[in-house]
Amino acid sequence: MALYLDSAIASEAEVVKLWGWVKGITTNPTLLSQSDTPPETTLKKLVALTSGPLYYQLMASDKAGMLAEGRKAFEIIGSQTILKIPATPLGFEVVASLSPEITCSVTAIYSAAQAAVAREAGAKIAIAYVNRATRLLGDGIALVRDMASVLKGSDTEILAASIKSPEEAAASLQAGAHHLTLPLAMLQAIATHEFSQKTVEEFAKGGIGLTNS
Image 1 (tube, rainbow, N blue to C red):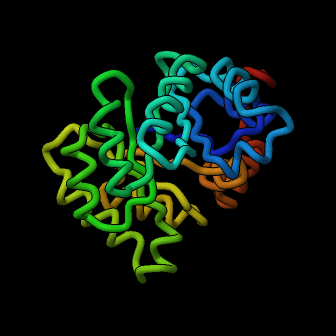
Image 2 (tube, rainbow, N blue to C red):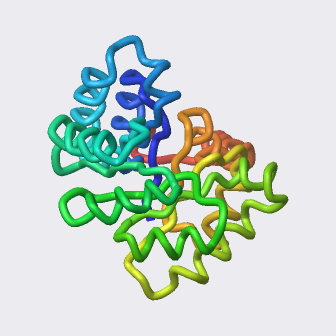
């Protein structure tokens, strides 16, 4: 399992690098638009701030353009590249073409059948937008569960995105997601519980350790 930062802001990547338990970074066109530097510069900054994968989503709308964009992203990011390719008929074609040379994920999957196609096209990661799927389909956790059933025994893993609460994060993992990608505030939220802090305070009141011995 891996937890990823869903952001293209270098200062946020610097924060999670210090934490030590966030294993990579996912970006998308919207997130890249929020950075104050051009995409190529942003990607170079981000890849220097993680030792794990850096996800880049293709924006081109034709096959030749998508292939060229994917290879350009790989030139910038290097071996840490995971391409995010939309779950469309054209996207699956591009995955089949690029997956032998660059690690690919398929993003915006909304059915278990699409997850099966992603697997056959050579994608290593199938991405489900959990909260968005709940809004559009009625149950994003059920989508993850169905995807996990279809992908069982294969090398294709599930990355759950669009997570809006710690409970939704845990439910996604329980349903079969292998990885989660979360914005900075949600990463902080899943690491925090009010009773944990209260317990620490109780120990501090009457306890002793090396710092006060």
